[in-house]
Length: 304
Image (cartoon, rainbow, N blue to C red; front, side, top):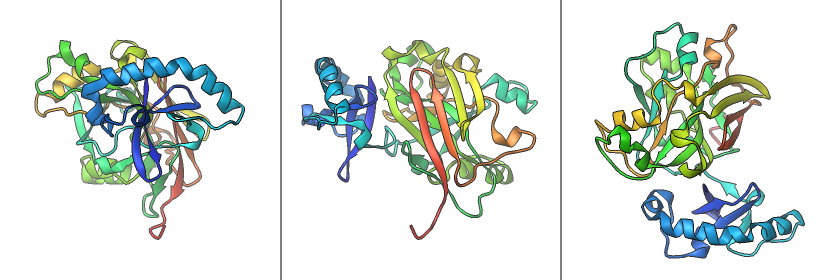
């Protein structure tokens, strides 16, 4: 399943993308369901039942939407919907540095002995297709394509062999990074937490639709159509189950928490010459089996 959060008027609602065009409003199917995914992850059986039943109508709804006919509730046209980040304001976003072999190689650094963790402020999250906004004084902002894991079941000190039980699904993430702040601060939090610097989505793909632990998925990043990053999750130094177990030794993972698993080589700061994002750019992060997260770049106007 592809789990989405979208706006109906001013209110975020959980839904399912049945296809690239046909969405399903879960609360219209069953109003007693929780209204946000972190609260739904513990009660997924009704969601799966709704998905199985309503998927039978997908062909009919596809014909209607392609003919330009309005869709009856609980269906809607995804082209007319405003998707949000699939999880809004999670309790934490935990990121992993230097977790692809090719990214370590481009920095001439040895492979780490343990995961290098840092955090991104949840307020950095940005929706699919909405802009990465750059203030005038940010001149060295980079993009990083990443596979992100969304936690569905709480846990602390999770054994590695049970890590998969705690995964709600996977999504695309762009770990937008202010390199000037990152290197001047000698730590990551400020440079990794700029507003709109955490594009995420377009949806969460549930584990049954991907290989176990999302292994062997191609990951790419394009800037303005130019391929900047290209790798595969089989190049992760610390795979998903290792990360969940390692992180949860020190902190309880909660439903909706996001673990963004690291970026491949090819980022702008390590190119010769260096390249950084600028207004007018378009960044596309693609993870095989999940989809493409696309965001334009524009200048931030404090008065807007």
